[in-house]
Image (cartoon, rainbow over all chains, first blue to last red):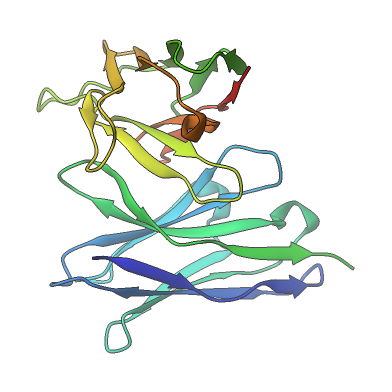
Amino acid sequence: QVHLVQSETEVKKPGASVRVSCKASGFTSTNYALHWVRQAPGQSPEWMAWINIGNGYTRSSQKFQGRITITRDTSASKVYMELSSLRSEDTAVYYCATYFGDYEAYDNWGRGTLVTVSS
Amino acid sequence: DIVMTQSPLSLSVTSGEPASISCRSSQSLLHSNGYKYLGWYLQKPGQSPQLLIYLASNRASGVPDRFSGSGSGTDFTLKISRVEAEDVGVYYCMQTLRPPFTFGGGTVVEIK
């Protein structure tokens, strides 16, 4: 049973950075991809980036390029998403989700981490 | 970017009655392997989204058979044969053919 546990709520000031973690358990191999999706209040989810856990390859949406960094710590089964130069529009719930290749879809989601950007 | 357009914005359905949600993509989601890279998710109040349908017409594990998905390369439909109280929430379609992966605007389903 795959389980994704995310870090707790964050409150940040504009211009700061935030790092959100996602700990994965229940995987039998490192052959999977973990994606980050955010959802602003009252909005649809928005895809941000992914990382291949096995080889560390990352890809992000052009919207966030230059501001987003995805890293992994395979020994701790954790993935980190860091977003810099925060602005109020970055206020959202940030989700990690596993991408199942056979489905070409997200089969497991974390509970989400609320990030509030406010002066 | 591939734009996903859902309709209607909201549905109010009597319990036990059917419901249908449409999703249209700005480009074909048909991969060269013959699969359509379209998924349907339900986000219940206060919860993370959960996968209902993958590759346009396949029910995910544990999803009741009252849910079904169909569609061509650009026009897709999610049907609920008999809506139950536990089906309340926001339904999203999402394309995973080409990054950036994109979601539809969502359809709110409530019980009348």
